[in-house]
Structures are given as structure tokens and as C-alpha cells.
Length: 208
Ligand SMILES: Cc1cc2nc3c(=O)[nH]c(=O)nc-3n(C[C@H](O)[C@H](O)[C@H](O)COP(=O)(O)O)c2cc1C
Image (cartoon, rainbow, N blue to C red; front, side, top):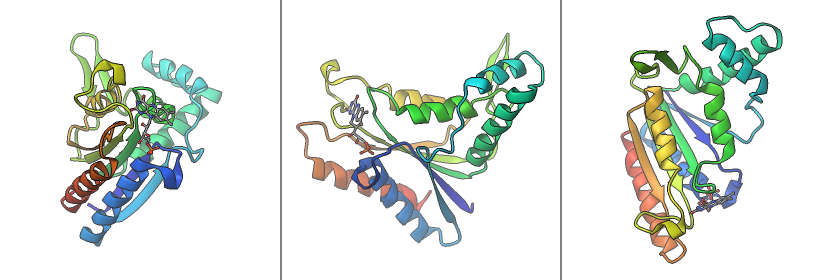
């Protein structure tokens, strides 16, 4: 194993809790994996292509044809994003909760890379197959929120963040997933929750 790719979904820079926890993780990872490199992919950096024409290309491929012209270009751009993602043996995602779910830039990433023949196959009788299940890739995910927390009632929102994103990972075939959570809630002890999340990140990173 020689590379950890950190894919981040918070645009909040130094104010970000998820980026801070991810930084604890990558620092501990680098200290305990001296021959490995760590790469950071900020999904807000403009590298994700628009997927309007890509959506047409996807349905062209889905129906057994080859995208042409603008569709071919959109398909190639999506493929470059997929290859960057699928080329890493270790993945770390940092994911804030936005409106009960994930930031739209991460959904854009999912919509760009989740293509037939790359991430999934589908059989009319047996359903989906999961094409990333081969190479033993490990995935860690940092989930953060500020209002919602485990054990709170629906008046504090619901978790469509970890449920959706971890399910998507498993659907791709990436089933070796670990989660680090930071959900201080509005009445909790944020500093204690920070220390707990940092310790969990450090522990996991050492043996990742
Ligand atoms: C656009 C937006 C939507 C948010 N929606 C929720 C939400 O639905 N539930 C919640 O508990 N926190 C919500 N939050 C708070 C963030 O999940 C929380 O502050 C998280 O730690 C942010 O991650 P970051 O600090 O890495 O940016 C929202 C924050 C933003 C900016």
C-alpha cells in the first residue's frame, strides 16, 4: 500500500471540523506509514466536471452505444475523475452533514463516478453487481454534524448523511469501511466530543 487519498467535502477551510479531524487522521497515517504518500482532493477546487452532457452520455452507454462528440468529451472527463478515485488503495472521505444529507459537491462526485462498467453492472434478473469489490481498498469516513446526533429525536433532524454515503460506498463494492463520528449536538460537550473523534481518528489511522 503506497497512497492514501483524502477526498474532502467541506468548503470551510481552517474553520472546518471535518477537515481538522481528517488532518489528525492523515498526520497519524503519515507517521505510521513512512513509505506511503498522502494526497488531498478538495472537491470544491473546481476539478469536478459538470454532468449535464455526461448524463446523456451515461444513458447512451447504458443502452449499449458509444458516446460521440460532446458526449464523448463529457464521458472522458468523468472517466478521469473515476480513475483518480479508483486508483487509491486507501481512501479517506471527510463529510459534513448538510440539511440532513451530504454536501452537494459530494453528490456531484458520486453522480460523476457512478457509471456502468466502471462502478457497477446491472442484470435484469439479478440486479446490480459491484465492480470496486476486487482490490481490497480500505475506506475511512469522517462524519460531522452540529445539531443532529445519535439518540436525539426527529425534531433534531435525521441522518441521511452516513446512511446514504456508506450505503453508496458498499454499493460500489467498497465494503471495508470504517467511520469516525463527531456529533457534539447543541447541548453536548464539544471539546470532549472533539477529543473523542481525534482519538478515534488517530487509532484507526495507525493500522489503516
Ligand atoms: C449548509 C449547511 C447545512 C447544514 N445542515 C446541517 C444539518 O442538517 N444538521 C446538522 O446537524 N448540522 C448541519 N450543519 C452543520 C454542520 O454539519 C456541522 O457544523 C459540521 O461539523 C460542518 O462540517 P465542517 O465544519 O467540516 O464544515 C450544516 C452546515 C451547513 C454549512
